[in-house]
Length: 201
Image 1 (cartoon, helix red, strand yellow):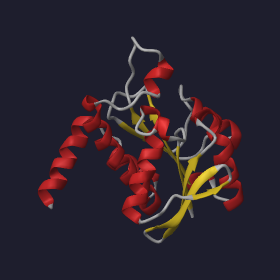
Image 2 (cartoon, helix red, strand yellow):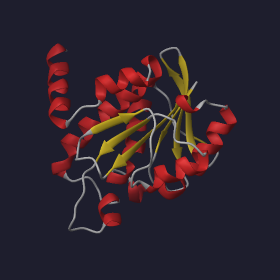
Image 3 (cartoon, rainbow, N blue to C red):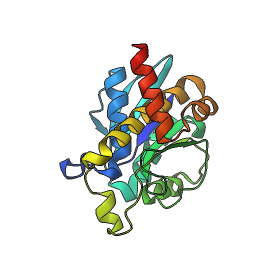
Image 4 (tube, one colour):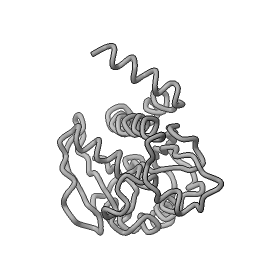
């Protein structure tokens, strides 16, 4: 069994904002694999289904971003999921817009939601997928991350989100090392992969 947690803020006010990359990636996984994320439990919205031969629990914490770890901890403890079977997807201002970075473990960086997840779990040895949203030095950080995705950002971010969703499924089916090799790529490579996929259809 795997738990895939996407970090974000609940409510319509935060839909399609830069800080909700985790929620948006889970929506893509939900659509592709027919896993409805609608059960409210453990202070999170949950969806149960399968990816390949593995049972998966999709998790959207409803605690707001900075307390994400409280919900993630409750789910992980209830299902007794080992740390290497927890996957966390979230936005990252320290990565350029549209970049994707997968790691098997590591620190939280500057992300408060991820910092709370690590604090609540008491360890950092679990896979994570970071979706780069870049930064805006002239704008307040909170205003920037909770701001809506602009038309100029839409293509690179949606492209990266699709790859983030695919990478999470790849971790479930083939392991994090395989996903790192396949999906730790920059926007130009993401665009090329998408074009190759379109041509193959």
